Image (cartoon, rainbow, N blue to C red; front, top):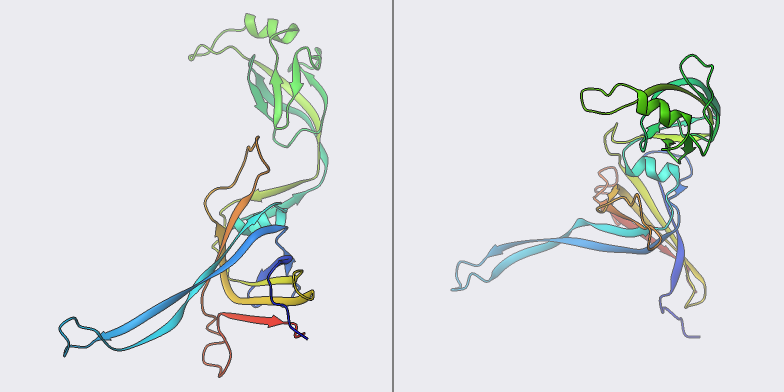
Length: 261
């Protein structure tokens, strides 16, 4: 029976902190996952030749990179990519949060607004109307040019910059959120697992284990992407694992397990 090694692989990418014994977590769906090794050539020139050709040398692995495109960005993955701290804040309410209203601008509430309970003046005896005085936006409250609030703003005294505003109090509910405080810790070392199945062959399984990697964005993190689905480029920088260095017959960089047919 001929063994079919034509490559058409699909699968999943997993990571965990190096040294952890917990199951790794999935990065999320990734496309175009590729490994590029880097070799270091050390040579000694031959002084007996006119062109200093090679007298002796050695080629040895210096590491490599794994690149891929994330098609989704789970909170756990974003936290690791941004060297961040993640805090899960449960759903709740904010009452009488102080803001200043300016026509045409958006006040950024302390939390993402889910539903507005009420927006009032400071005294609390005037309640402003949704879609007349204001409209809820994804990140805050936008103040409209019509309604009683706009009239109050127009009658207010401008500040030194010529901007007119009035104080308001906003009460609202907010959803459960993942609060990601980016770049608040040093980058970590991880183990990287690429688990695949070769659909073009006999559905054989394969797992590539990179023993010591660092992870980072390979450029930019999409924030607004209107014309196409957002993809997040990720680069894993591979280096030798010093905990495996020197073990006879074992790789300190990469181990590949492939199901035998």
